[in-house]
Image (cartoon, rainbow, N blue to C red; front, top):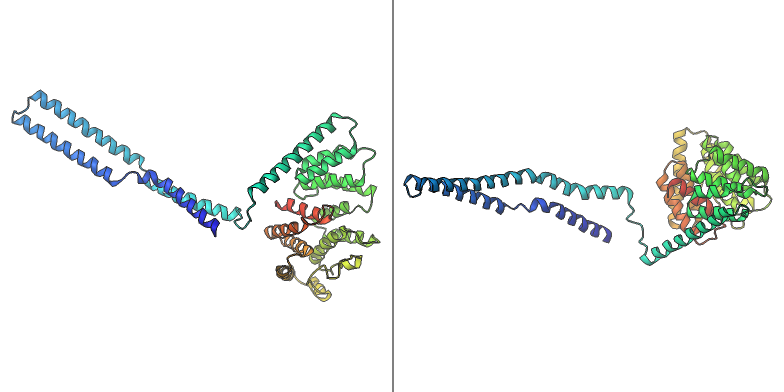
Length: 387
């Protein structure tokens, strides 16, 4: 409420300032000009009468008439200039439209509900960013000046650029070492990730090739398989995308943290093709006592969904999403739930809602280590959604 009061006050101030040129031409100024003109007309008539009565010499009368007429012409020119420059209608229209257009634009692009950040904290964030930028710049200069620079240095630089959101720079850093004899599978997959992030989430042929090379070195590289699944989904092969995730999950003998993200993504794909969702507990998750799909569909519902039309299936999915969103209102700390909701909104083609859900997940992830694979999933999703 305080924000809107301040904004309203500033808008009124702008209107007042814009109206000043129009308001400055008061009626009194017009009345004074008319009175002066009437006086000059009376003086001119009086000069003529005096000349007729021979009170004034003809030369004096003529000079007086010239002077009075000159003054009358000057007043007439001033009146014309005021009439041509007043433009009061345009001024008033501008004064009204400027704050109205500003408010409309802010309602579309602004976020009045966003909590403010104290100035000291913003200054600290800027300083941290400047420090990281300077360190990255010095590291790059050092690596470029040394033909035999170590692979670890370029990988560190690439990872730093990724955290800074400079994805193309990150890809360039990883590209320096992917053809070296000591290139590792994780370096190749990181290179591919940087390329995907730089293209707003699209798996380009260049990125796909990087993931293929990563899998040649390690057929079970989770990141490479995840993005291969994404590439299949982007070309319309939803079933192939699901199978790629499920096959790696089934091939593992023990639970790994990245499995959470795999199951989440696989279940979004499963809902689209009308098959039963995966259960994270089946893969040995230590804290998977609650179903990862939340209050989702039963096997019978999934089977029924397979017989639905596209419109009916869409309504069916939306009803599940609505139930999940309502549950999260009472369980706001359910990280996996927010990820499920974000994925579901993405599938439904609702980017604004997906972005909001991912931001809620990012807030919860701030208390977890950077090694948590869900950190990467959320960062890449927000980069794709422009968040």
